[in-house]
Length: 446
Image (cartoon, rainbow, N blue to C red; front, side, top):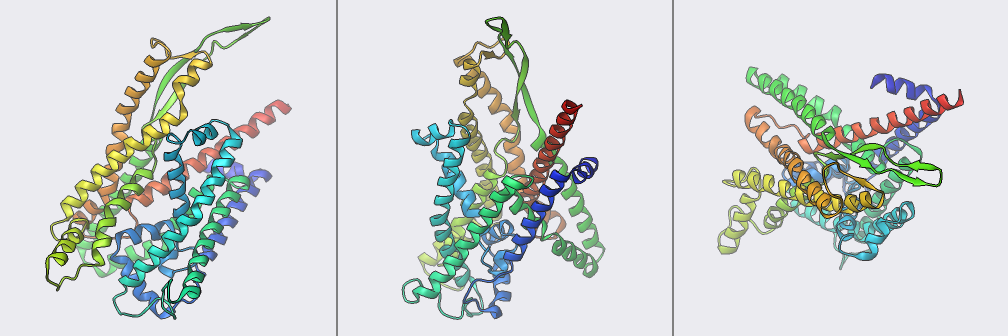
């Protein structure tokens, strides 16, 4: 890996791409510290304390690279764009026009991306309003986040300005991601998320050192166990991310004039974890939502049936709720496994592999083309996805299990590790592909 990086830096074109990517990440970190207008700086400390008690806000803060705790213009991160991308992928099998666009190659991809960006704008407005309203109500001191009330009806222009600045920050980050796709290295949106997570590593290191210094021998042992579990988790993520089942494919020979085409052998790489991090995001967002809504109506000192119902949902759908921890973790595990199967099937069906094989004269040895090939691939997909789904489910609940064993809580969950490792592997793979292409061109030039 280090050899590949050194060789890439020595090549002017690749060096320019790497420096461009780093420059875009620096711009992103600068944007993450620009506050929204009308902010009250004195309430930011109270906001950070509120974020520690809100599981969904912590997840969004990870994707925003800590911009949410500063309530900057980039507080939404690129999460609205991710949501729009997921919605477009789910709609493609349901809407024939979108499915046709997905089969039109590069031009179809450009049109779908344009639709995703258009859909991102209303989703960003909705998320900005809901997220800001939730954080405003979660402050414990009674002090507002803003100098003037956050009220879209009675205080329209200041509130609209706040929402517009947050939407503009999200669209700016999406544009930076597109620039990285064109002129940099790696998948732009993933690199932006990667940069946000990695930017918090120094803070987490300081937090771990402080925990080790202030605690006794038990705390030191717990911190050591935490580090070992983290290293094992990274190893497991690499193995699952790179794991694949290779299905052999043979292409029949075809004679056209005096030339013979086909006849070569290849394979279909079916990944163990085809869904990536999307099932984790889906499951965590859905399971946390009832508890967040219940927190608006629940008063621990209150009475009445309504308060009791709100308290039940608040405690049940919270990892630290009274009597709700086991229920929460069980539901989270099952939701991740279910979403992994669902999203994997959606992605696999979009590729339409059996029809493409049949059209190009390809077949799996021992399997009849057409319906038999489709059934065989579906059977293999279900088997290998089981391992990926169980692993993702375990990754989802691992932070809570680790905390119960070590009694140490550091704000870098397994989801963040999955994103970081996945983006690093994908970026290194693209870098190696660029190097291989240049070696190939040099061989031809000789």
